[in-house]
Image (tube, rainbow, N blue to C red):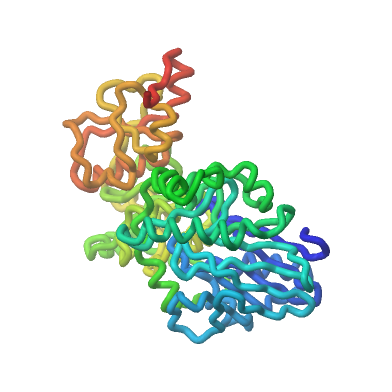
Length: 452
């Protein structure tokens, strides 16, 4: 709650992002930074007896497909930053522009940095500020990264972000609630971020980047905190600028495909993505299929390893959520979701077609060459002393030692994806460790290795 105005957070745990549904107090709602499928926003509004009348976007998103066009098709008035170059007709806002929302006002504040066109939105009741929607500018214990546009603009955008914070946002009242879009788990956040919401005063007191001595110190700290990011980030801004394909609010479905059809599609270049848990994939999977367990991070990793134009076929267990899989895949820009293998691997094997397997080994028993596929920050926080480090996103093209190899991560999901990508390229004699570094340390009584 913000005063008498309710702000409902709609969190995507996998992407680490929040959208917001704002009750305007007159039966209407405003949505900030909606993701592609409108169902969660419609449901949040319905439960409160509201209809979605307005939707705004803080910036051209790189990490997910925007839902603005979906909400516009359902009757919402949508607004975007004027500098985004959107090709679809809509309201374009610049610094200082205001939207009148009944008794409330939404004011656009130019806050370039994360992106050149970035706006934050100040919600006010008369002259009284009641909430700041900071998008990808000021985050909780962090700010958003500035290296997603192009390498030659990274430092200039970092300097612009410093000025946006100093000259715009940090001049707002200390008790003003702040609702960022990017948060914990988002690859747009630098560093990783913490809670989902904050206040101006809290960030002044605790945000490590805001303790920088000056602009140069801020820029140096920010640029030092960048890690890798999924390659699909480089194309979704253009998708969102043009306006994505519309699917509507209905429950997404996957067509059923018999084994012969799946085989034909794979021969034609389709990717088979096996979304079952690690143990099921290890016990038997379609040759050449890629493991990517259905979980909140499914979409992010799908976007990391699958080509942008990939035609996708899925393998699932009977109890897995097909609609969630489709939502996540579409949310990172995949449009060719051809269907799922009817009857799963049992149906495939029943036709006499072969299944491949992967050995699972206890983390306590790993030996030989161990390849840790976690992110660099995770690896630096503690790893097995002899482990080689290659991030999952780089594994397919890595120069690896001769097998046998044991792949590991924190639990096994990413390691299995890595093993499947290597097998797809012809690597053999691969195993996947169950468990992570902390499990190894607890089982062996040995300490993990850390830099320095």
